[in-house]
Length: 422
Image (tube, rainbow, N blue to C red; front, top):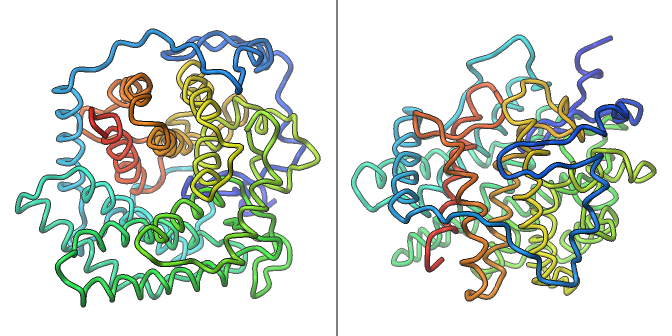
């Protein structure tokens, strides 16, 4: 059997998730009865016994977490920035198709790596623009990254009919371009060029949206001009967040595309605000991957996306409860971190959801009233500080040479929202 079909990973840049056949999502009953005991995660039994602890209509009880010192946060951010500056490629991008291992995800060349590099570079640019100083080294790094993005972004396309990783590049480049637009507030000509690039990404996202609305990153059906695969909840969420950011600078994305993506995401939402991995799993809503423990990394992204687009059901208490759940039950995500095989952990969690999920949790934190945020910042800050590597980076899944820069970018943007006053 070919590798392509057996690992078929519904990979996001959150990257590479296997598109698992339903039969492979059944977890052994013995596994479901294991209790997870890791930092920030209380004991669970099959993701069932403690679910009634989270009443989404009420403000949750906060776990006791010592808030990190401000100096510790700043030092961690400085070390992460130093890693990104050192790790940048000479051409201005971040990441490459090197550092391969025995097991690699399906990534047809060269298009898959064009997508990974565009998304990684965009995330690194966003992170530096948010947290780096205005010193000459960081300024030069951003200039080189911006030049690379301007030169290469208009060439980004899907790799093959079945591998649509370019969606991640289009989404994260919009976020980076929005931040670059803010950077060039005194240069109207540069700002207009950036807006034109964002509009091109709107067009590409319209071209590659699913026939049912929303986006996936594989098409194992008909591989037509327009993708025929079911949309993936967290891809929809990531794109919708980027589109909302573009709207904040006066660029309206296509209304029909947004409306269909919201509808596709809502179809995957369960009553407890966990989300199906993808719409193709709608007939197996209680499989582990679709349970709260399997949805920890996705829920944060989908909730903030819907909230940004006006969904009143995503209340402050929904956000607060899922922030607490993310901390208390972090073991469901953490047990998959750094595993080389996607979805081999409990609840079919893949490593590359870790920093992705915490970044979007930080965006949820921003949705709370300023007076409520200080109580929840330590939950995210402590997790990030405890997982920083000796070289200043963060990573959660060995993905060629993209994992350290993308993980570091997500973690830096998470920590930035944990600083007092943010």
